[in-house]
Amino acid sequence: MVKSIKDTDCTKLVTEGKEATKHSINIAADIFEEAARCFDSIGERDRAAQHLTLAGDLFLELGEEDKAANCYGKAILRYLMSDNIEIAETLIEKGKTFGFTSATHHYRIALDTMDRRKASKAKTEIIEEEESSSLDDILPEIDLLPIQVDEDLIPLESEDFIEDDVLLSKKNYRIPQLQVEKESLLNTYDVLAAVSKVTRDQKLTAIETNAVVKDSSGELKIIQPNFTLSVVENDVIEEESTTIIGEDPNLEDFAADLRMNDTLDLDYIAKTDVKNEFEQELLNLEIVNTIPFQWQVIDIKSDLNLDERKKTEEGLVYTWKSGQLNPGQSKSVEYILRKRIERSIILRRGAEVLVLSSYYSIDQNLTTELNFVNTSGELFREVLIEDVVPPELIVNNMEAGLKIKPVTIPTHDSTLFRWMFRTLAPGDNFHLKYSFKEKPLTRHYIDEIEYNNEIIRIEKVSQPVIESLNYEFLWYYKFINPLESKLVFTDRIPSDVDIILVDPPHLKPSIFSEKTCLLLKWEILDTDKEANIVIRLQSKESFTPLAPSIELNEGKLHLVDRKSTSEKKIIDLRQKRPKQKEIL
Image 1: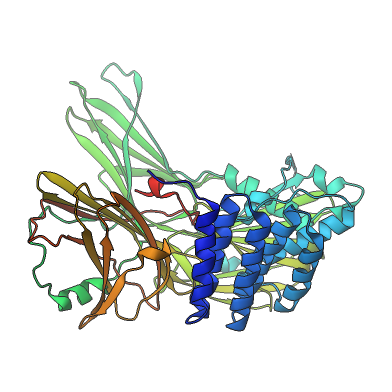
Image 2: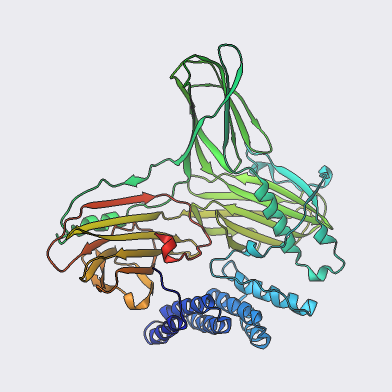
């Protein structure tokens, strides 16, 4: 059972933070942020703001201005929630020197909130922004009224950057929110972003598949194909094994395992199977697959004949045909697919908004180039360009032709890069090159040991933290110890990996240097029948988390059921920290 958080729990974190300032300002800043989240959870907004401010001051001392500005932004929001305007204004001035980058969007939100409050001279409802929240959570609700697109005034992408198997979508809408009398009270970019979000949500994202046949009497039958979508490389599942705890490990093998390439794959296999499960032959089999433009078709394998391939607003539509399907016989279509970058360009003309949507493939070297030129002959004001990056990738570098920076927004299934332009003159060119690195996997380990007819169980989940430019991981442990004895468990990390946070702090591991890695060792008292621990690690390169090991002081134990799985999951990019009981 997970105990509820109390004021004393938060105060313990504050004490830990103060103690940490004596030996590590970086760790202290992280602990004060954790304390702020703790105070938030019990409704103490002012105390949360105080410790966010402390964290910001420490990051500023370290020269990490983006992190400092972000902490100040979160603190400002909490002071505004409790109408502590004077302190909020002080922090606004403190953070203005840092500018706006993708890492300081909380400060931008705070500044916009303060400006709206001053402009309207009324109390503004403040939406709480947690570390893992998305800017999309505070977008206004809008009504889209579709109208005819004026073809003569549409700015076009450079033809060299539009792919043959992608359809450039052009849609025009009238937006009632842009017809208000006092537009100074309205953040136009929020409205444009809301338009983009609504239109993205309306697009087909799932691969659609259906099939029809005729029976021997000529009657048309609709049949349901079997459809699967999986990564090219199957998940790794280790066989069950029995071993002796306490034997000396081969440290060279540990080092090799830790440095394995452990990243998500961009390539997927989409397979459609149709089997004749009737006792009579089926005629004129037709399979239709609609593949949204979010997917690039790399290769196709099929034992059917391709009848038609066409572009529609929903995506690429493939129609496959076969003359006859005997009882028990199967036919299939297999696509090798790769994720694409989705771009939306949102242009305003008064109360009308034009949305241009296109898609761009990712090269083998993990780069993508995008180009946009205003060829309309018209000056556009308040232009928003949004690029949706697949969740398997982290943006490592951006090369933009203009000196502007995007706002980065983690969403539940992607990362959104939002570029804002005050004006876009005729002939203006916005050229951009993204360079990516692959995101590490989520891994889930389960170890069980039988001892004196009792089962000791340990679970470990390793999740990547995608907001960091370095490789960072959150490791969640859960232990069940039914015995009246102390439980000892160990884990290993590469020697150059840093542990930057442990929660709860009193369950920090002892660390021992081995030849090629570091050994982490925990001792769980027999009074703790269940233990939940979270640690945060940082590395300069990716590594493969290993399975932990369980030990007891009384002799050697036989591991009776060890199952280690490597699951290639799509992680919620907002990284909202789950409760322990929801993790495992």
